[in-house]
Length: 167
Image 1: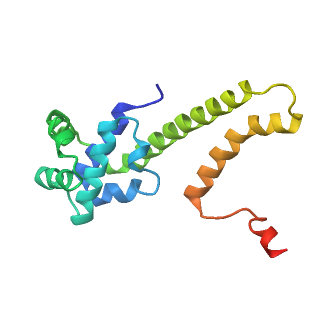
Image 2: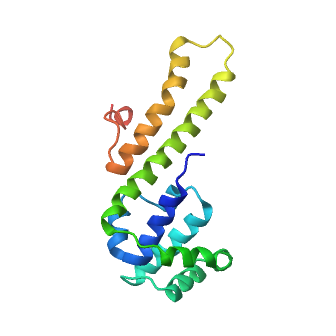
């Protein structure tokens, strides 16, 4: 599958090691859903919650945050991951590079899903559709992915949005 488990672990380790400094480097492009692994999503949520309270993360603070988020059962089942993350040393200057890589892989997974949805729609066509409607289905995944990218960068809207009401 489209994932990089080691980079995901390295980002989580950087949050343990560098705290808010690492979070600031990645917060604009990384969210829990960006991680492919479910357990990594859970750990990111707990680390993020910990860093809302403190500039650094300790294991007790991490476990407390997991409890507050009702994720403590999942975290307790993965004590070896906590130890692995705490033992890694990640250079703070690498955090942004790793975050970009993970974000791009998430974009690839999202794109694949959009294309699969378009493929399902295309398979339902009967041949009675217009060429434009067929092309619209083919182009839709690209537009949706571009819209996702743009929404991350700015909260704009379509130029003609609301024009019918105005007229």
